[in-house]
Length: 517
Image 1 (cartoon, rainbow, N blue to C red):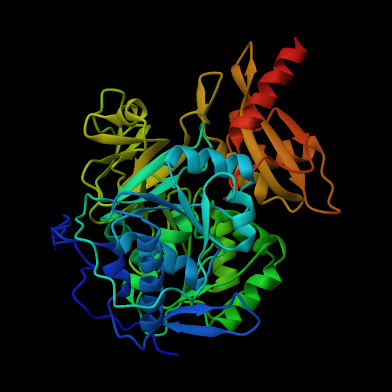
Image 2: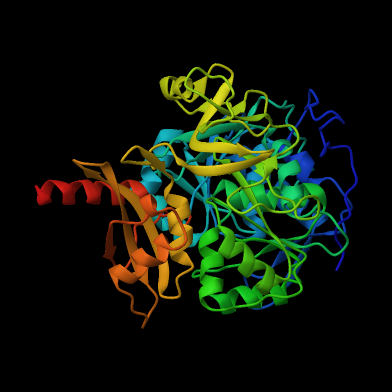
């Protein structure tokens, strides 16, 4: 298999030795991803029965074919074009074609229903959606579907639009964990901003034999810009696989068939692998992000993979700003890593000043992966900033030069004068042999302001009592932070990216308080 071979004029590393961005005047993500030897493998396609290796030259031809189709459809610079496709070579080519002609791609998730699609497509003003036959049936009355097959219009190569770092390239909608999904508009610098963190989280991605895959869909920033596009820009083959439902066996099969050496696993996938007691030897790096893992999960990762799971941190609005890197420094349980070069990360107080105490995790303007703005939401864009700092909405504290994640501002529990982060309690409960998944929130309480409440899904066939689980947490964490109430459920509300929607659990807890009184 050919790979890890990248040459060409498009800049990939745009950091100076002192850690500041030096972005060129002309920058286009399509150029960054398509430069290199035409016969080198770009994408390992496992979406069909047989493996198919797609070269960089073939991907470039697919991109130009789709670009000609878009131009024939009347798409011009700045137009928004939806991409409703799962992991596949044509999905990558669709985004690249849109960027190449100076338009703006809008990633859409294949599991969205019509209401979710309608809200995003309508808000973005996307008149055209590149999709497949299944997707066309969903978007037919919302926008014009265009089947993005691998065959396209023949013709001369398409010239790349004259775009710069600040020109809009992609409109990615948040998962909606803290409110209505908002469109984060990113410029062509967004890929450059991701590359340093992606490299670190995979112990310096781009080593001989590296090959990257994630079960996360490419409709999300984690799949598109933590895996697919950085791999192409770095000359690392990326695996595209159809995984309608994540299972440990399907995961192991993809890793074997695709010669995968580097994986980004969302925390939910890691928990499923741990619950099934799966080991996956032979990987060179495993990265994870989206929520903290905890010491027990990191210990299990060392046993299951024979390496350190590298956690990273960011959000749709500004991603890949903190990362662990086992090759460079040891992991510290409870911490999510150190700031990535090029991104100034701070914990600030209410006045916007950096503090050594608990505060708001913030990123200084100037990060290349920072959004340009929220789409059509100037007031919410302004509210996202405190002076020169983008406020993530997360709470944290420094432990030396490691960032410790406490929880989202809305999730932090105030109980009897203590401020309690739910993540640590969830991590603790997840180490109990009977617990499959858990969500922890604060329930209103007239005496303590709030009490800690845990909603727990047990593993099939497992049993546990409330008293057992409370004692389990008391023995491992502070006595004031154990869940005073525990409720067993058959499932928890989850986003499509696998995060527990604590907001729904908090509403449930508040309603319970009302009924109690």
